[in-house]
Length: 162
Image (cartoon, rainbow, N blue to C red; front, top):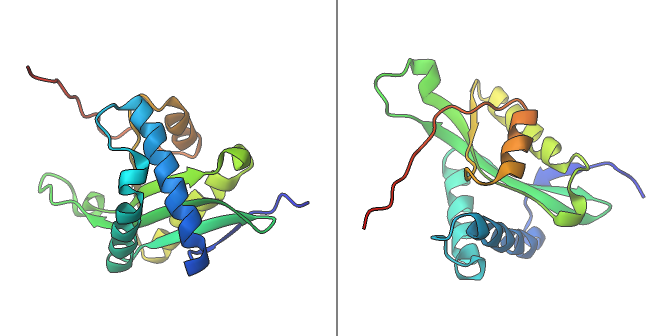
């Protein structure tokens, strides 16, 4: 058994695993944010949407494998912020929409390999910034992102009315 992680573009054979991962990710985040739909309700449609968006916006859907098993995935694309108050360079960035590592593959370098692949992708395009979001209550995701060099950029506050 090897610890090597291989990252490659998503193949058709990977799609069922990615859809299952998306459902699990949605259900996990639903435990942290109660207004989210159940994973099984949205995973297939959401997978189609992020595949289309990544293809249309110079991005990719990548799969990490270890020992022939799908270990996780990352999806990302190029974004252009329309905030006129930002400098031009700050308006252009890579956006990681989704990152998931199978529970049995966590803490084995899979997420690091996936994020590094996204960084290489955007560096090759001349993009100098990478953004990723996390639900505020998802301490594990926030810790992973900070350990990988991400820092909070903005905070969004919400107040429920009524």
